[in-house]
Length: 514
Image (tube, rainbow, N blue to C red; front, side):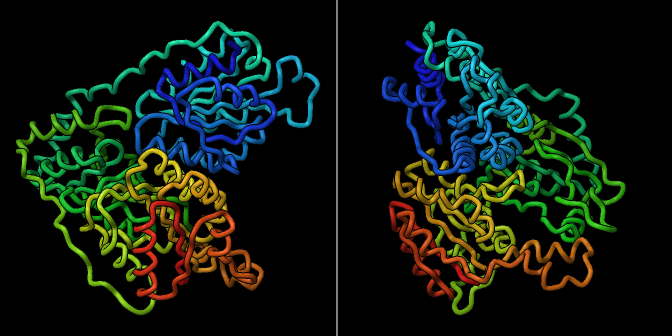
């Protein structure tokens, strides 16, 4: 068999059986190999940023890597923004990037680029295969690297002749090492802080945001009087009725400073110390109060569940002592749409098992309280801050969990970066309901213009943050890519449209005009 076939067989045997693709000439032997090897499931994406974002969503919901197939340096470059987001989320991923044949690179053909140079800032592991004989082993190494805790991005670069030359067959993938246990000193220190009686916050992310981790953290909090909070953005948070509730650190600096001001100690469980998203004149970068002591119970790559179990034992936290979220539905609103009324509609209609891909940016900042009592669901954030992730993330989650409803909460400005996701959703009949919040502006940046102290902005500056003239027509754009869509302007219309989207078994888009 040739190198391409040996690689595909290695990937399938190694547990990487989903590929989000946007191939070109140099990847044609890989494409041909897909017909020779059973088990690889391929999803065509019309833009590489959709492929990388979808691979991120798939990894978040399965804990295992999907692959992307990208065309040379420019194709990888198009994928970089969402690779940045995936790296910040520690989502495991294997990128396969085509390259010119080894003997052709010296001629500096139009698509020649420094692929390794493009890959390194958004990858944990990068390698160019030197020959067809090494492709399979290199692919196996890429899978192992991707599965290193807490999850890594591997980029394997394939010169075209390594895919068509004869290989030695598939290679076996070695298992990645498991998560390391937290040392006893960290447990003892955290327990001592919790026994001190000083106001203490447990700040969580990663494994600790899954239901079992939340139960353990909730037991510790109920026993010691500590409070719980998630960091501002998280790979995946399980929440809803019956699950221990917690809020996130707010995005606005002043709100975050206020929320964190009571605490003399913050114990980090996978999380980073709280910092501002950006620097602002005359505002701090660190969000904890002056004199607050930061303690680390577990690193993100360590076994947070084991650490929480040992901490619960150390402070005498008994099973059943955690206080789960009670089920509740807010009053169903009527009339005008605003962030609070939208949140109330969501709180009423979210189905059990829903997966939320949240890139609602400004509109969605207040969605958490009114959706807290909905049936159990998963909530995913953009952890890297590069907009254009919401719809690709939802696409990958729908591939990963075809039996669950995926709901994408999307800002209109962000959505325009990767609206090609809708075509992939339509082609493969993926069960995604997308709400686009059409405020006709980069509304978050209108606020940031004030926050950074820009004085007296005029028409030219304000125009750079405005999405009107002409207004974007999301219904027509969705229809043009094969997705059923509707436009709503009030709460009653949103209730009807969301009910229709949730009843659909394929993609559905709602333009929510604000």
